[in-house]
Length: 148
Image 1 (cartoon, rainbow, N blue to C red):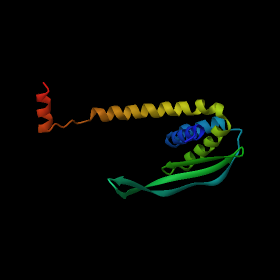
Image 2 (cartoon, rainbow, N blue to C red):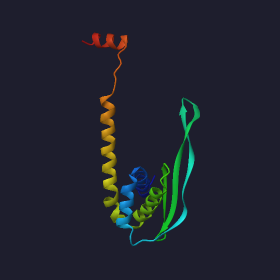
Image 3 (cartoon, rainbow, N blue to C red):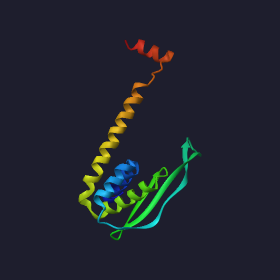
Image 4 (tube, rainbow, N blue to C red):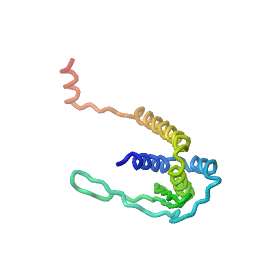
């Protein structure tokens, strides 16, 4: 994947995982002078979730997702995300188009989202680590005793 495509894929992922209220605030702050045109959606639908176990592919569920496509300053902005928040999908698509047309805003818009997501992940990992259970089998205990 080329550098620009990789950057865009990263920011699309950040926008999809960001909080809806935060995205709405960003759009109202940066997009006030921009008018966008809806090309598709926002609309909600279902996607099939599949995985592979060994060599067998199987469906393990479905999820609600929302998508939106907008045009802003001649550029198309896209959003596809889990959930059914139509306003968030529209704000994400608008911010995608804005980030394409104004590279100088990327750090200002994306760094706070990146920091918030990192903090949330660290908090989740801390909670999970606190509840971890370590199981010892007879073999594990024997191996520990043998290494002493």
